Structures are given as structure tokens and as C-alpha cells.
Amino acid sequence: MSAPLRLVLVGAGQMGRAWIGAIDRSEDAELVGLADLDPRAAADALAARGRLVPTGPDAVALARSESADAIVDVTVPVAHLPVNLAALDAGYPVLCEKPVTPTVRDALILVAAAETTGRLLMVSQSRRYYAALDELRRRAASLGGIGLLSTEFLKAPHFGGFREEMDHPLLVDMAIHSFDVARAVIGRVPLTVDCRSFNPSWSWFRGDAAATAVFEFEGGARFQYFGSWVAPGLETSWNGVWRAGTERGTVTWDGESSVEVQDGDRAVEHLDVPHAAHESIEGSLAEFIGAVRSGDTPSGEIHENVWTLAMTEAAVRSTETRSTVDIGALIDDAHAQAIATDLRDDLRAVLASWSSPREHLLATAVRA
Image (cartoon, rainbow, N blue to C red):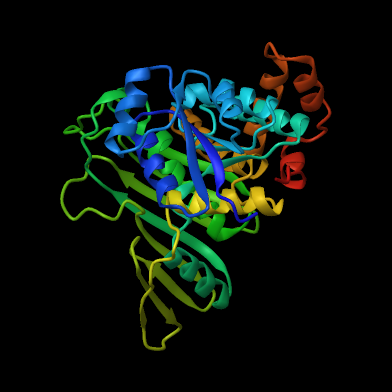
């Protein structure tokens, strides 16, 4: 139990390099292999970190040859389904970068695979791992619970590459983080969304780089999102700026370490929250390792994470149809689509056994 978890990392791109660093900084993990279809990319990623481990194109073969304990999937989203399926079938628990798949349909296929194999598939939603966010959640609960949660996300990055060619770059690649944080903070099931995305005239993205959205949650709470990837000047943190309205007061978070709390008309408390030992992707990695060692179910387990992906897909559908979208109905539709795809018999049988997909996701999880 005290030995580092032996990990094979799949994907040698920009995020792959970030994960090499996170694994190297962890006392509880050891990088024993790097898989990528491009051997030069793998060699360059390792050289950039001053590392030397075995490489190859097949993650499962590499994991077997290096006696790995688990696989970390940092490939592009369209590759997540085949990479994760192969790893789960081979008996390896998997930590996968978000989004777990491009569509809820494919995510449900992975839910079925996790159930069939009995292996953990956890999704890394790294922006829920911040000490100051935990403080906001705790203080909001102490003031009666959240009725209205809002965030502003305003940045102006010039990525180049695929993001600047996507149809919905902000919603799909970035807002999914805010949606996941909102779900974690409110602690209830998202019901509907009304979203409108657009592309300011000065945008350097082909697709919509700005959006507003309002989600309704079970129990009546609302979450309001306002974001832009083409907002130079007075930019927010990469985590956004958050405000939680409760029965008795308000809590704010600047996305870094500053939390402010006002209980009614009392004086405002200004808190500078120390950073936790493990935040961002290091927080995801730490929770994954803890789950594999303990057998506990982590917060990003695939059944639970489907709701975050469904919020994102529903937001895209809402802006494209200019209508309010029912998130549970979207999951039902994705379930029917998954059954209709060309699937293995064992996966189709698992999917077909769910009388209510949304209730199944809420009631079922695969322990590590």
C-alpha cells in the first residue's frame, strides 16, 4: 500500500507533458511508461521533463510489460472511447482527462464497460480541487445552502490549433469545468439549461467563443454562467470568479485564494485560504490513487461524471436550437443512441438492462 502506484500515461501532447510533471511530483505515483502513436512526440515529451521510461504505441501492451497498476488517458477526446475500453477490458483502472468522450452516448458505453469489467474509470475534472473552493462550499452551506450560484470567466488565450477551429470551443473545452464545479458546489442534479453562445466581431476563433447559460437544479437552485475566451483586459482567474447567494448571506471566490463572506448585515470576512497540498490535476491524481488503494468511489467516477458532460452537451443543444433543454431527457436520448450503435453484446446487454438511465446513473457506481 505504501509503494507508489505504477502508471502508464497515454498521450504525449501538451496535457501529457503536464501530467508527466504531476506524476513526477507525487510521492505516491511512478511513471513507468508513455504511450503515443507518434514515437517522436513521446521522446520529446520525456526529454522536456528530463525523463526516460519505455514508450510504445499500445498502452495496454506497455502496461503489461512494465507491470503497471493503472493507466492515465490524456489523449484527444475522440480517442478516449477506444483507449479506455481497451484498458478496462485488460483489467486496469483508468484516470481519464475531461471530457471523458465527446458525446454522452459514448460516455454511457464507457459506463457499461466499467460495470462489465468491474474496473474504475475516473474522469479528471481538475478545477474542483482547490482549497478556497472547498471553503466557499462550506461557508455557503453554513449560511443555509445555495439558491443562486454564478460565475464569470473572462480570458483571451491564443491557442492556435484545434480549439480555434471548433464549433463551440468555449462551451466544450472550457465551460465544462465551470459546469462541473457548479454541480459539485450545489450538490444536486441539473435539470434544464437555457444557453446562448455567440462570437464577438473581434474573435480569433472560428466557432462561438462566448456564451451565457442558466441551469436549473433539483430543489430550485439556479446556476448562471457568463464566459468569453476573447476578453482581453481585466481577465479573471482560469477558475473564473464565483458568487454564491444563500438564505442568510453571500460568499465569493476570486478563483485563486481569496474568499469573502458576509452573513446578513454583519461585517465582511476576508479570507486568504492557503493552497492545499494537491490542487488542479495533482488533486485529481491524488484522489485517483487514494481510490485505487482504498477501494472507495472517487468523486469523478464515470457514473457521476456523465452529468457534467450532459450539462455541456445540453448547453450546446440549447444554443443551437435556441430553446431550453431538459438534461434528463438528453441522457435518455443518448442511452437509446448507445444501444443502437454497433456494440459488443455484453455492453449492449448492460445498457438495455437500465429501466431508467438517469436513475441508474444516480444509484450505481463502480468501486475501485
